[in-house]
Image (tube, rainbow, N blue to C red; front, side, top):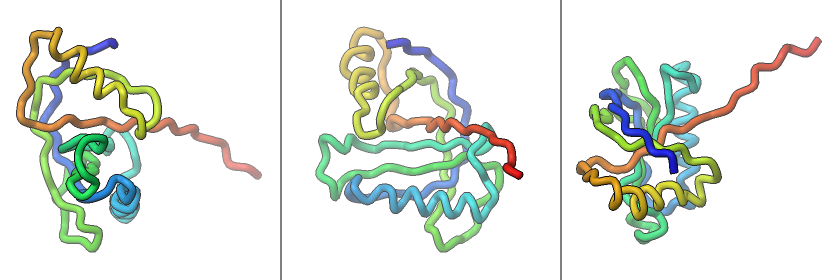
Length: 144
């Protein structure tokens, strides 16, 4: 595991709070996607997607599962029908590792906690684990 220690900057985010079964998480994701479209915030370096996970869906009961689905923003969040609210990911010293694979099998997060952390000499803050979502986009020519 290639772990890098970074200083993550304070980041203002627009959030859809998902509470409940991970099986319905996609409904919350779609609320954020629609809000992003309405506010013209496409995935980019300026508008990164984050997932702040308050607990492990493999350990907690589905009704106790909680995640904040986020997009970084620079403007204030107006009252809206999607339930999007403003929050901040604080400036933090973080252990960063790249996960390659499915969202359903996050072995990287488990390995970071169970293998790397005990050997590292590092200690955790009280802020939950978060993921920076990456997207691969191919820009295609228009067809004539």
